[in-house]
Length: 489
Image 1 (cartoon, rainbow, N blue to C red):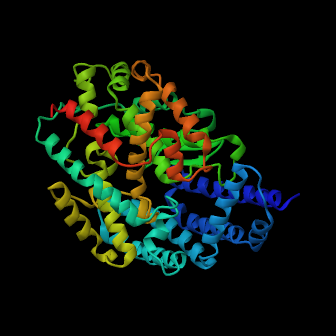
Image 2: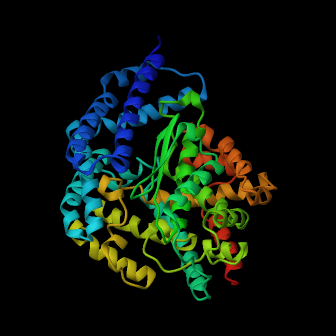
Image 3: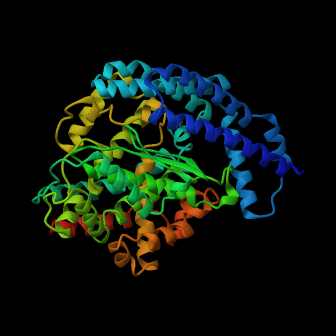
C-alpha cells in the first residue's frame, strides 16, 4: 500500500470512532437516563483521549510527507487531514480530555439550570468551560487571535473580523426592516391546543417531503433540536409544544436540511474528511433554505395548511393566505430558534459579540447574564423576563461551541445566494412546492452543494453553486421583498 492508502485507512478508522463519539452525544440528549451523566462524562473523555491520540499520531505526519494524490478529491483529502493534524498537535492531550469531560458534565448542568431558571447553578461549570476554551484557543492561535482559532473549527478560512464586517453591513437594513414591520398590524397568531403525538406524525411526513431518508435516519425528541451523524446513519431531533406546532414542524424541516446535506454527500467520501459538511455555515445554508425560503414560502405553506387542517381540524385560520401570514408573522420574542427571519440574525449578532468578548477576556462569566440582558434590552427594546429566555436558552456554550453561533447567520447569507440561483434554475419551483413536492429544489441543492461534502472550501462551494461571491445583499433583498409584501411596506 502507498503512504496515501495507509493514511486513508487510518483516517477511516479515526472517523468511525468519531461517529461513535457522536452517537454517545445523541444518546445523551435523547435516551440516556439522567443519573448516567457522570459516567457518560468519563466515557466521552476516554474516547476523546483515543481520538486525540490518533489525530496527533506521528505516523500521520510521516504519511503526509510521503503521500501524493493525482486527483482533486485526493488533494482535498490531504489538505483537510493536514489542517486537522496541525490543529490537533497544538492542543495537549490532557486539555482535550479535560474539555470532553467538563463539557459533557456541563451539558446536564445547563439543562437542569435552564429547567430551574437558576443561572447561578450553571455559572461555575461555565467558568470551567470558558477557562479551558481560552486555554485551547491560545494553544491553537499561537499568539494570534483566540476567537479566530475558535471560528476555524466551524467555518474554516474565516476570521472574526470578516464576520463582523458582514454583520455591520447587515445590521442597519435589518434594524430598519424590523422597525417598519413592527409598526404595522400583526397577522392573526396561532391559537389553541395541538395534539403532540399528531405533531410528531406530521413531522415525520414533513421529513419525508423534504427528502430525508428514514432508512438511514430517525426522528426523536430533545430539549434542543439537533442533527447528528453522517453517511448512512444521520439522526435528527425535534421538540413539541401543545400550543406551538410550528416549533415542531420548522425545527424538523431545519434539521432535515442538515441531515439531507450529510445524506447527500458522495458515498465514496464516507468516513473521510470530505465525507461531512465542509463548514457549519454551509451546513446552515442548507437547513435555513429548507426551513425558510422553501418551508415558509407562500407555495409550500399552502400545502402545509391543508395538512394541518387534516391533522387538527379547523384551528382558527381562515385560508391559505392567512396561514402564510401567520407562519411568517414578525413579533417580539426572546428565543433564537423561534425567531422570525427578520429578527433571527439580530439574535446571532448578540451572541457573536458576547462570546467574542468572553474569549478575549473582555467579559467575565460572572457578568454574562447582566451583559446579555443589557444587550437584549438595547437591541430589542424590552427586558429579558427569565433566564431560560435569556442566557440559558442555548446549549452551545455549555458544550464548548464558541465560534459556532456566527455560522448561523453566515448560513443565512449563503442561503440567500443559493436561493437566488435556485429560482433561476428551477422555474417551476412554486408549482412543485404547492403540491408538497420539494424535489426540484432539493435535487438542485444536492447536485450543486451537498454531494461535494468537504471537497471545496466553504465560500468556494457557495460561489460555484450560486455564481456569485457570497455576500449579504441577496438575503437582505429577499427579506425586504418578502416582508415588504406581507406587511404592505
